[in-house]
Length: 399
Image 1 (cartoon, one colour):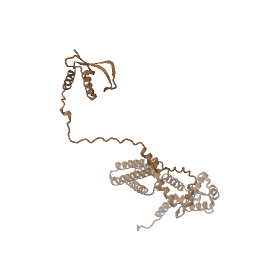
Image 2 (tube, helix red, strand yellow):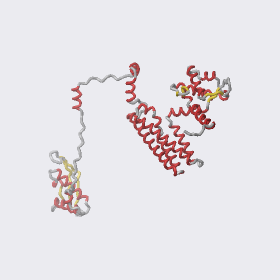
Image 3 (cartoon, one colour):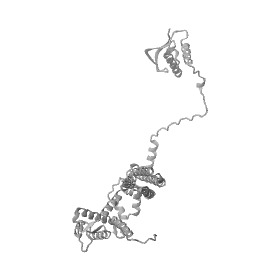
Image 4 (cartoon, helix red, strand yellow):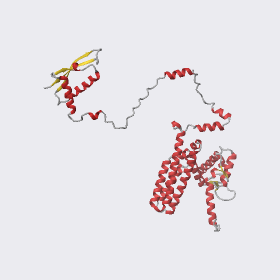
């Protein structure tokens, strides 16, 4: 505690701060020491502020305020008006005895608008506005280093508290996480703007590297916490990714806490499918046995890791070796003749005949070899032979 005597200016300054807080939260106060727990009381305050805005410089009397709030019970209106008067949200137009007309405080209206936005998106829009204003402030040439330091420290504190709240939601019940889901919308954009603000401060004032480090770590903590919370929220939605469907935890909590009457009333509007017919276990076993089964895929045999040159190492891979081998095959078939029928040289063994036809086709495609295959249009079919059909052709030696 400071030993300095309390001056009149200091007392007035403290009273101004307290008065601002009272007017800002007057719309949510049940009395001078508590916050309302009935949303209708907040609606009464909004209705009164709307009536004051429409009245203009005429202001409102007590009877006019009651007429504007005629849709609400009289006791609720009287309680709300008493609290709003006591906290300064509604005051006399002129502070004199027997004053009959009242005016609304601008601070209370703005505070109620702020609170409504907080209720709608959990403070996302306010954080966007705060970052936009801070970005303009740190870019202003008139901003001092102390002001930038204070701005970075405030943002770091806000992001750390926000990250702690998201971590708590992630580890808590899924019902609470779904209720606070608006706090997860636009987190990437908020982190991006905060990092841009951090870069501006660090560029203009390199001396603030320590406070900027705290801000950067707070932003990263907020980003990590928001991603974990969003991941759990997406997992709770199932494969449909439909957040409007109630999670299993909500149904379990309802069944454990609801009364018998309320639990029974939930099923009044439900239509259930008919029970499945009874199936004989023997019929089910027989159907499983007779069901077609896909053939299992044949696994590839394992290959040895040892070096294996194979038969390729014994083959002559020189350019003229293949031509020489084909010439030997052709000469062995022709002998002293210049023309031989393929039906006479092909044996009954089809694999060997297939290899021989492949070699003769290669001989015909080699222009450097003096051999040609000549095919006719005749086709012989004999089911007793193998192959059962035979095209007539000749191997000829060309001049």
